[in-house]
Length: 211
Image (cartoon, rainbow, N blue to C red; front, side, top):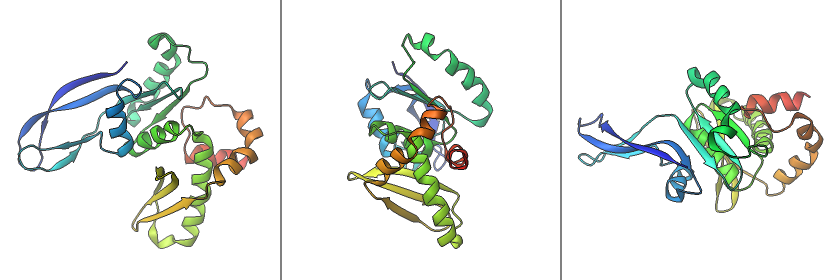
């Protein structure tokens, strides 16, 4: 199930106070409208009813995708160890058979949105992270002046897109067959490492490429 509450938000521009919705947990199957806001990147935005300023709110949230059997915990760095303990008992907590679930931890909002998009499209985030790393390494070599510090996966009009964050805006379209090729080429390695890692990111992908 989902858990939400109403909290008071003070606009940093004009000081106006108003209520906003804070999601402590969000079940995408039960709350499709809020899920779509997460996929669109607007879930954490609040618009001041007085001056119109849009502000990004930041709070921890558990996103649950029942259809694709995935849970994504968005927490701050200080809460990681506690969250790992919670994940161990998540089956009992939710009364579900979690044997086939992918349980992930992320520590920034873009990664939460990214994981939600990946799982919503029935993709394997491990394969996506390998693709991201390959492109990231290539982009660093070709566009060193962009000073890239992050790359995120999106789906737009049915196309797989990578957006690079840095001093210069960069993006790349991933060929339609690349996902299937990487999934096939790394099948044995992915089978060997399993799908229970809490952190599946570029660091995880780097270790996979080494091994």
